[in-house]
Image 1 (cartoon, rainbow, N blue to C red):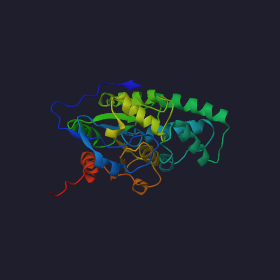
Image 2: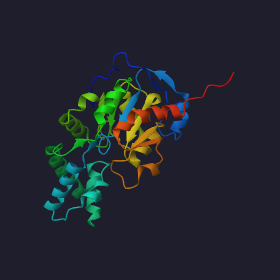
Image 3: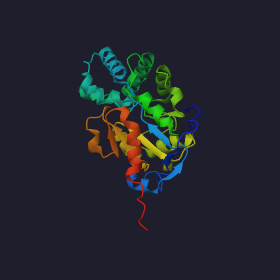
Image 4: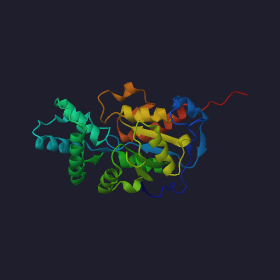
Length: 271
């Protein structure tokens, strides 16, 4: 697990947290309703997916996939189609790419292709991948309000760290956790809980930001509110997947975080 120090900005205004009255993973309840139980704490945790949320990694992921397919004598997958295959880790990307070409390899063959893919991808990990517009400004704004940032991804941890290092983003995150960090991956809610706790946080004071049904399902299973970005990698529009809020640019994230919190804040009773 890659870990850095997560410290609130000096004199940061307190941010709302204590989002849940029961954070047991697997309990499906309404995060928005649970926000009504919110209390004030100095450092809530904002949990980010990586591919398709923080960083547009599709060009490098898909170029690596199609180069691998070419070596196997298989026609490339069109970029727009392959973009929708991202989100479940490299093995799932390979399986989806092969299925699109009518191929269903044996497990041993998939293992061979997976090892070759990971090796090739690691060499080009940030050739074309870039943060989505507005990301750093949004992180600056939220850090000034006392938020701690973590990454919870189905990418391998070492590849996640290498990518964020190459983009000079690693220092922004208290921990960076991948599918191999805890031996479970999204949508299993245990990876979300373990990531938050590794940063010294608690699910009561966590919000998730992701781009797919996998992220939304993970958040729901952990009883954590979720903001979805609509510029990521999903075939189904994220607005149809019932997140708590949808944004189309990172410039909208600070206000969206406030809105998700305020939407369910209890209204003071008249005397």
